[in-house]
Image (cartoon, rainbow, N blue to C red; front, side, top):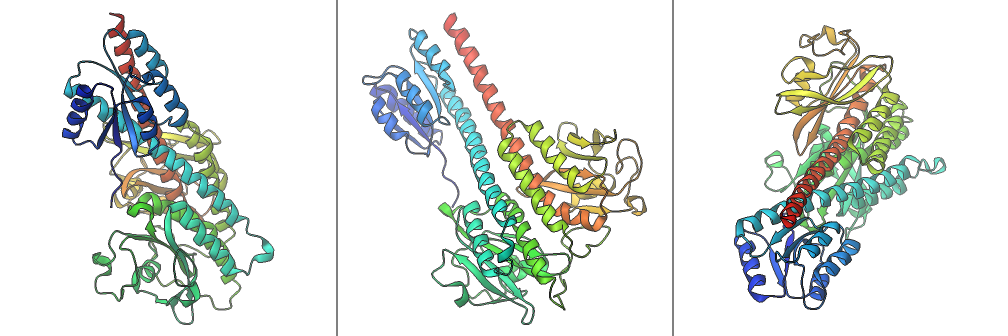
Amino acid sequence: MANRQPRVLVVDGERFFREAIRDALAGAGFDCNAVASGAEALEAALDPQVGVMVLDVKLADLSGIEVLRRLRAERPSLRVIVLSAHTDQDLVLEALRLDASDYLAKPLHDEELVLAVRRALTAFDVESSWQRLRERVRRLESRMTELVEWPVERADDVDGFAERVADATAEVLGASKSSVMLLEPETSELRVVAATGSRIAAPDMDPVALGEGVAGVALSLGEAVIVDDVYTDPRFSGRALHNRYETSSLAVVPLRSAKRLLGVICATDRAGGVPFSDDELALMKILSLPVTAFLDRLAQSEPEPFELLAPEPVEATAGLGGATAGDAADAELAREICEAMILELEPARLLDVALAAVLGRLGGEVMALHLIDNRLGELVRERQAEQGGVSDRARLPRDRGLTGVVLQAGSLVATDHPERDPRFDPEIDTAADGEPRRFLCVPLKLRGKVLGVFRGFPDVGADEAARTGEILGAALSAAVRSVLLYRSLLESIDEVAEARREAATSIQR
């Protein structure tokens, strides 16, 4: 079930206009209600599903200006389009000062009305999405801190730690059910050690064999998985699911270190029946970082660790090495990027803080973020963090070198000697000075589509860079989404400002 379309509320004391506006908007496909008074408008606006109000400035009980003033305190994200006669110039100007998103003069033209409402709904959607993302990242950052700072004296309390992870997963993703499953090396089965929202206690849940069910497949392949309908998804056709899942939509992220399969984090039954998306998967990947570090530290004490049997989930010209203290550093890096998303609104500042954190973690001379510019058909450098005076290239083609491989295949590349790779292009896969260096390139994705790449020339070796690169793929993709939402919001604000200027000019005439 998809998110419902935001509702439009028409407020007009004259029945003729009220019904004519409602009918015109309903005919254009909008979910639309209508009321006749300011009091009814304020009550109806309490419904968060109402995204746009078409408001007459003159009402019998409360003036439209008073309604707008109260809405700015109670529902600041609600978009309000004011209606007036040509004689109400002072009221219209006051409404615009109170941040009304648009102005229409009676009698209305249906096409003009529909366009104004559509523009207002777009602005409402963008701002709502931005606020939801910030709130979820705020919750994620808080939960990450809690897991990273798990008390040393409780280091062997696996079940207690897993319970916190399950709770954090449910909270951050808005899922009513979540679980943490750990691999038993002796039996090659995943055992549920913590769960939320289930009527069955975790110890009583059936284990899942490695390679079976969604969880077993995700762990054996080393790949995070989103499933809209587990029973019709061709990836799991013919596998022994046995009605294991109460919902058809779920998300699973494997917990795996460089040398061990550890377990999975699962989420099902998202609030409102909305399917999981790449956004949720990115949040789960970030949340999995301190979990993997914690579990791997415990597993390292075992004399014969369960060796990684699955294929590597990333394309790296050097294989992943053994686990190091870098796991905790990667978790801290992801937490710093999440914190920047909460504290920094301005895109340049957000990316500067994030890239500076990456430079501090990986070392080297320059780290840069490049996004696809469809008008130019190239990658364009968005921001960079550098030390020592070395800069990354300002523009890059989309189909050449190792960078082009990452962009087209959607998999990261990490190598100590890029010049030895036959795909290496010295005009592409080096910084602006043309000097070959250790190379890390990570795809940045939004809803499964590659939007750009992160490129760095780190001091650390390819093994460590590849592990950190997997983390950066999720964390920086979330940061880019935040930047794009902010820019969309600014564009909507610019459109509104232009509408205001046109309205003011028309009034003055």
